Structures are given as structure tokens and as C-alpha cells.
Image (tube, rainbow, N blue to C red):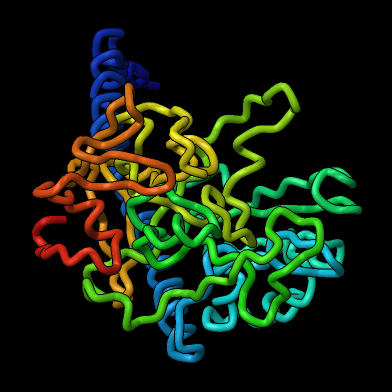
Length: 368
């Protein structure tokens, strides 16, 4: 009997050096791929944000067509000898966003922050969330009973705000509101509401009128109506009263400056350029520079909707004025309560010019 040799060729394994080289190559490939994946995801989020703003802008245009004016930014609701906030402009355009069910849940005959309106304050509207503003998505905060109204008040938030122009004026005093050159402003009591309330500091103050399309003399394609207002940038650090900017700003049902109204008085993303500070010039501005300005998590700028329904990405490098920390004012601007004045011969920068409805500035699309 003969035997064949059972010897087989030796199998060659990886050496430690070869294994390390392979791991290093994989690491390099992942390092190259990851930014591309992140960029693709951000591009998708930015596209969704653009679509959200387009829906809001078109709803605004349809509201104007149906009512003969744009909605009030902020106004007051008189009820039983008292007053408080009425529903904000985002609530009023809901039927034109195919959200009539939410709109119908709001009782416009009473103050917004009444127990009867708790359903709508706590109703989330995902069209109002920028996907890049991650902390706002599905976020709901419930104020305890008595903090805002009798019962607990749930609140949801918005990543978008309406533009009131480039002056940080927010008051129902006519002399102040007359300077507001954006689309949304503080209107006092809307037509049809009592304008005299016994014993109240607002007694006898007149009701102002919302903006009409005929007042937009700069052109619909050159006038911002909505911009981004990144909620996730706000601090969660409580103050002495236990309140936080994160919980207390960007209420979607509100028409207040800092909630759903912004100004271009400060540069886009002011936290990167002028820091976060409070204005002390007696300008009736609500909140600090970040709270009242446009901002976003998109790299390099933010999305803005215009009155013609278009949406543009405006870069942080856009021509804009800066703020002198010593005065709290832009260059060549003076303030004598309650009026701002631009010195003669001063050119209004592109960013501010885009936010005004009637400034008479000439702007080319290439400027932004």
C-alpha cells in the first residue's frame, strides 16, 4: 500500500504591518467620505428649509389676496376689560398652508394665552421647523399653572420669523411704529377691538393698520418677508427667576419681536459678529441681539423668503452695517427717542435694504 504525502502548502496570513496599513487606509477613506456624507445631509436639510419658507411665503401671498393686506405682526386682544396678546401672524396664515384644522382650534375672540387656546399653543407645526435647527424638532415645553395662564400652558416653537425692517422699534406708539419699514409690526388693537380700557396704560391708544401690498414700493422680489430664526442657538442656562431663553423665545403662536418677528438692525448671525448683548438705548426692543435677529445653522448664511414667493440663501458676507458697541448703533445712525436718523448721504447696506418695503434702494440679485 502506498501513501500520498498529506502535506499541504502553508497558508500565509496578514502581518501586523499589513493589517495596520489596511486600517489606516480605511480610516483615510472614512475621513474623506464622512464630510461628503455630512455635506449631502446638510444640503438635503437646507433644501427642506427652503421648501418650508416657500410654503410660508406663498401662504402669506394668498392671505394678502384674500384679505387685502398682510396679517398683523403683533396685536392685542381686549377681553372683559383687560388685554393680552392676540394670535400672531403665523396662526393667521394657517388656512393657506392647508392647516385649517389647527386654525379652527384657535378662539380669536379671546386672548391667545387663555386656557381655551392651550390646544393650539401646544400643537406642533413641523413646517415651521428647519431640519438643521435640530433642538426645536418635536420640542414642547409646558409652563406650570399660573405662569402664563390659569392652567398649564404647553408651548411649541418656530424656526422662522417675519421681518419688521431694519429699525429695532417695537411699540404701538404711532411715532415709533411709523418708522417700521418691514412687513410686520406692532399694531396695537386690531380694528373691531375696543381701544379704550379703563385704568390701563394703553387707554385711548389708537389701532394701527397692517401693511398693504401697495405700500411695498421697493418691489416684491426685493423685500424680505420671512427669515430663519434658529432656536437651538438660545441658552438653556436659567436666570435668577428660573427662566431660559430656550424656553421663552420663538413661541410660534406669538407675534412678538423675538418670538416670530426679527429685525436686520443687527447683522445676520450676530453672535458671530457683534456678540450677544442687550440694547440699552431705550428702543423698546425685546430680548438681546441674537433673539431679535435672523440666524441659522446652515454654514455661511441663512434662508430668506421674499414677498414674490422666492427663497434666497443670503450669505453672512452680505453687505451689512456693523454695530458700535459703545453706542449700540450702526455707523452714521443717530437715535433721539423714539426716532432713528440716518445721516444724509449715507448708503443703506444690502442686507438692511432687503428688509425694508419702501426705502427706495436699488438692489441687483447679484448683490445677495
